[in-house]
Amino acid sequence: MKLLKRILRVLLVLFVLLNIIAAFHAWKFTHFYAAGSFRNKLPEQMSVLEKAQILLLGVRISKSIVRHTPDVPYETIHLTTSNGLQLEGWWMPIPSSKGTVILFHGYGGSKEGPIPEAAYFQKLGYNTLLVDFRAHGNSEGNVCTVGYKEAEDVMLAYNFVEKKGEKHIVLWGVSMGAAAVLRAVPTYHLHPDKVVLECSFATLTDAVKGRMRAVGLPGTPFSQLLTFWGGIENGFWGFSYNPEEYAQSITMPALVCWGVHDNRVTRQETLSVYRHLGTKKKELVIFEECGHQSFCRREGTKWKQHVREFLAAR
Image (cartoon, rainbow, N blue to C red; front, side, top):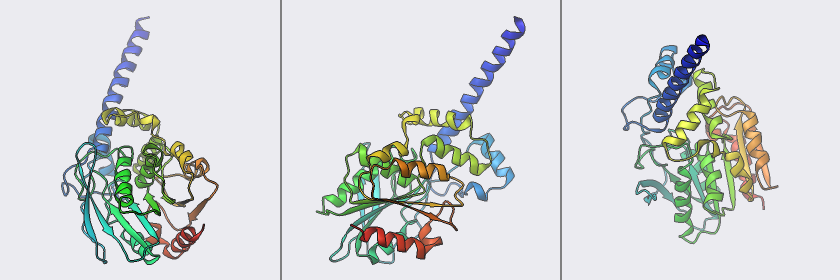
């Protein structure tokens, strides 16, 4: 009996310690340091020592810096979130446009990331709007919820364009940006003409698993604990943040893109998002040479062909 009690005490201590570590890591994962505090590296670029430091000290992510601007004329615009944060965007209208494409970057990125995609959409005859999510680029804040609260940023950008009288709006998002689009459409009752979703994770737990996978750490049970604490620390239930379920509300035409060498988002996640889409007008394009990256930059000819045909289809 005494041995059993000792074992239970040890297990309890281990359980508490594991949760403390998970809560600490979740905080570091969602709270960015001031821009330029550290040189951000992808997990794939880290040495074994750097990965060990992450395990002990948590990830250190500096807020992204915008270093490049579009080659075409643009207007810097600002949007205000419900908690008073100022978001920055680049509005690039063209004469006699076919509509407007709003582009949303991924976790740790900025609005400069999709500049090549925006340039091609403009070539096809669309106005474009590039937006820095909260805690990214030139937008205010330092807390990132991996697309959950960023869905409000999608709504604000959509409303900005809609108030200009635009009737034909296309939402484009990559990774966290795609997940934020999926959540924003049903949550804020948005009605875009079409959506383009690149590298979207299926659930928040899957997103954390992808991060663990990139660092070389086991996904279970740490990903579940990080999902729990990440949500609690940021005011929402992490296990209910499932882009694959939001996909059921996507009733407009959708283009889904994924790269074979993506070590963050699995093929199964992509298929789950695709199958859950509530529209029959959907297309899945798989890029054989790409990982978790810009398809426009890596396989531009193929990406442009599918985007062009998708936007032209009725």
